[in-house]
Image (cartoon, rainbow, N blue to C red; front, side, top):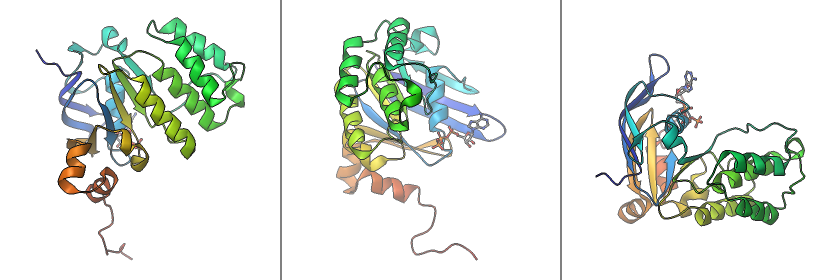
Length: 242
Ligand SMILES: Nc1ncnc2c1ncn2[C@@H]1O[C@H](COP(=O)(O)OP(=O)(O)OP(=O)(O)O)[C@@H](O)[C@H]1O
């Protein structure tokens, strides 16, 4: 019996001729916070959307908790998309009610406590919120579910550094040892302290999947430094052609 939470085998997704994901083999254990890292267009959002069931793979297989993607796995997954999808007329409390109606595993008290801690009033309308406040609200709602797999697509892109710390703390304190958090981000240095593992995606392929301890221990470098080496686009000391 495989005790991995996520298993992808030969996972391929093509939108046209070029694959966005190219024969990806991945196994994600429960109880980990994992960074999904790669340059623009490397396939991060595509992988996350396949795990949510929003996209279907072209080839290969994918399972969450031993089940193929479908209604059963959707109930186990809490997903933060890379863009806001709530109507502007909604108030914070409408969104809290929306989540409470939709998800049996939603913890209302926790969500309301986090709103209070962040100064997000329950009567505030989405359209009057700053971009960062909307992102914080959406993330705290997603993290208030008792899910097995949290898929966070760029959760800290639009928030200030102090709020980033709060959000990372929120992620750390809201997941259980049985659940895993997969976080896609370009802000590696900010998120590095909370990561157990990293996955480097390059042109739709996994070029490295390792623990952050291994990376730091074996190479004596931060994940951010290793990422910059793997994905350097201009050779050191090199120049762009005229
Ligand atoms: N709906 C689509 N139709 C055609 N091509 C697409 C579509 N969505 C994504 N792609 C292509 O698939 C590849 C992977 O895109 P994806 O959005 O998964 O990358 P990403 O790593 O999340 O990028 P970013 O860091 O910029 O968000 C890119 O080459 C992109 O142009």
